[in-house]
Image (cartoon, rainbow, N blue to C red; front, side, top):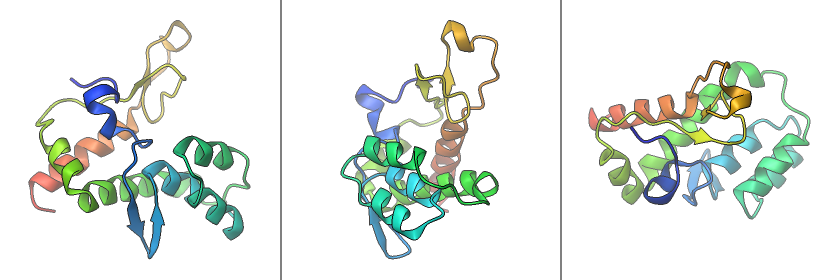
Length: 147
């Protein structure tokens, strides 16, 4: 089990520098891509895309007007960004493949039980969905199968 995306496994984090190009636009990280996709306004989306750090893109993404269909598409957007990360960065693909069949879980302390798992006292009775971990394992399986 890999339960934290730090140290040797920092590359699994959406904050890890891993340039991707999707639909002709370059993003520094999956976080920049994901956050920019939530913006309803194209100008906001571009500002978020070009943010110099994933943390800044996340901050900007929290303050933009969110597109109306976001809840319906956000998991597909995350999958698309994560898949691009490992398809377009061969060294990261190899690192992901080396995790073999390990369970991947974004353990965190910021109470994110949608994309990861927080085990603090405040979250101990909350359901954790680990959606990012599940997407990473799905991508790993698809890469292994040649998809």
